[in-house]
Amino acid sequence: MTVGGCLLKCPTMTPLRSVKGMHDILPSEIAKWHFVERTYRELVERFGYREVRTPILEPLELFVRGIGEATDIVEKEMYAFEDKGGDRLALRPEGTASAMRAYIQHSVQVSEPLSKWYYVGPMFRRERPAKGRFRQFYQAGAELIGAQEPTADAEIIDMAVQFVERLGIRDVKVQLNSLGDEESRPVYREALVAFFSRSRDALCPDCRRRLEVNPLRILDCKVETCKGLASEAPPVVEHLSLASAEHFSQVRRLLDRYGTPYEVAPRLVRGLDYYTRTIFEIEGDAGELGAQATIVGGGRYDTLVSELGGRPTPAIGFSFGIERLLMIIGGKEPAPQRLVFVAGVGNGGIDRAADLARSLRKAGCSVEASYGGGSLKSQLKRADHMGATVTLIAGEDEAERQSVTWRDMKDGKQHEVPLSELTGRLGEVL
Ligand code: HAM
Image 1 (tube, rainbow, N blue to C red):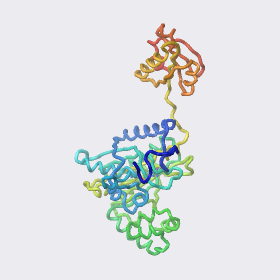
Image 2 (image 1 turned 180 degrees about the horizontal axis):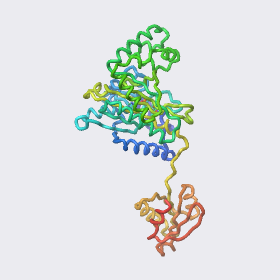
Image 3 (image 1 turned 120 degrees about the vertical axis):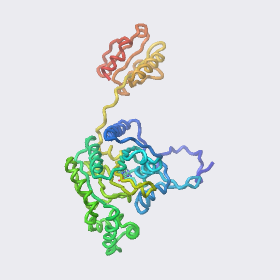
């Protein structure tokens, strides 16, 4: 069989590599991942959030409608394709649009006036790979659906800050802005069109097009000349409707009250079209990523649910990339789980070791055993290599006495322990 002109059964033995920008997470690294995910789950569940899991593949249309046609994500970065049945699909580039699709599809608003959802999973963007930027990356996020009050904004921002601080990241600061509502949008759009039209020729070709389609996106352009122009553009906060200005001031008042470190960033726009009113990014001391880095991004999206075909429902959320977070927290690895090694020696040693390992695992211990037996010396070497705290030696003599030999792997001291006391003794040291 051939695929794209290439034989599926490869005739050469060249080892295959993972796709550019997509990485394996090896068992040796996973403890850190679990630590971050566990910390996140524990915290958000305390705030009443429950996990949602949505498919990785979605209809392409979801992101075109949800994130916006003129955004970099949809225009340049999506893994989109037609499947063999002719359906236009995309690997999800973020989690919010998928979560809202699920929220609408399952009529969740009928049974719950307020929903608090969180998710953890892989996202895909075909960006230029760089330090902290990948083509497959893991995002964890939270979405608070059904609340329009500023208290909701302040609570979710505070929750995200608490999470980042809990991981030991220093110099945490929230960059805060408001993009206004449906009333302020057209007014601001007009102000931007008037401003950028004066320097139309200096804009990059993409931004000249954005000027017609969505001028807000010019504020997000990465081309230097556009960046220079954007820094002079009128700030959105000067064009807020009364209601949006009041909402923004209440959010700030509450953050002041909580002591949440923030500053107003009048030119922050964020790269997704669905945002309304409050938007924010959280930055902190970035360690190996260099200087300050953006860790969390989020905001309010009060019109997304209705734009995707649901009943008008206000919502706000955030997400962060786990890889970036791990690069920032660097060496702060959680203590490894304590391990017991079971060494079987003498006649029937392998079976005795396997039986003991099995019963200790059932009792809740982390246990390794040597599958092929071997000399005691080689088994102890293996136990040492695996970082075992204790090795239990199951020899013939011990078996007769219904006991095992306990070897402390730190100082090499040994003594015999009756099998009946074993789990209790292990419980004291593990
Ligand atoms: P976003 O700013 O596009 O927002 O992404 C959020 C976070 O995902 C970023 O701050 C960054 O940590 C991480 N991230 C994004 N792209 C990459 C990449 N290529 N490689 C590594 N990490 C990356 C959203 O996705 C919105 N859905 C956030 C949100 C939720 N707004 C409301 N609810």
